Length: 252
Image (cartoon, rainbow, N blue to C red):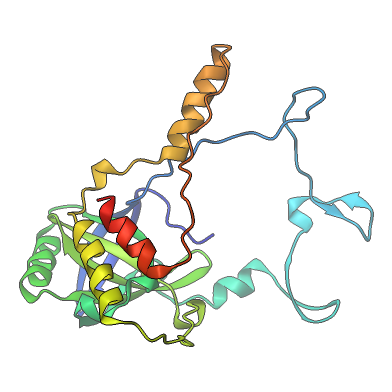
């Protein structure tokens, strides 16, 4: 999938300066993992790679990659051919420019990784201080396994965070915005509602309610208890916009 492996060693190329780093994901997956079972015998399902043309199972060694350019017509590539297309400095993070982060719409942000120093780390700390003083982020490019990335490097909480970026062609922003006539009163009520709901962002406050419910249900099933269904909030739909805004404010 192109994800970086934990504890992967790499280098930041900053002009003629090479900064050795170890790369680790920022995000860990806390989703509960389920196995697929056969409902008759309760054993796990296995998967085989099957060729319907030859009507037999295929070994990994006999599988190649092909691109379908016409119906049922393929050009094929072996591993060496694909590897020859990668840039020479694979896994190196090559800085190409420095930009204000406000110029990048967050919709382009994909995945984030911590870049930690290795060795003595003087070049790492110099780079951190330079990013901190200039208040800029580094725009860079890199290759991991079979995927080419552009990414940004930013200084935060005494470390460098690398965030890979989606390409322009991957982002689907629909610019066909329908404009409606809005009254001053509607706008005033909407602003007042926003002001009444304003708060600071505290990540520790926000929990994955669905995963918590799943884990509780698993423990209940292990203990032979019935699953407690999550309570749903029944909100009455209000079609009139002004009425909906006024009632929302009155509930605050």
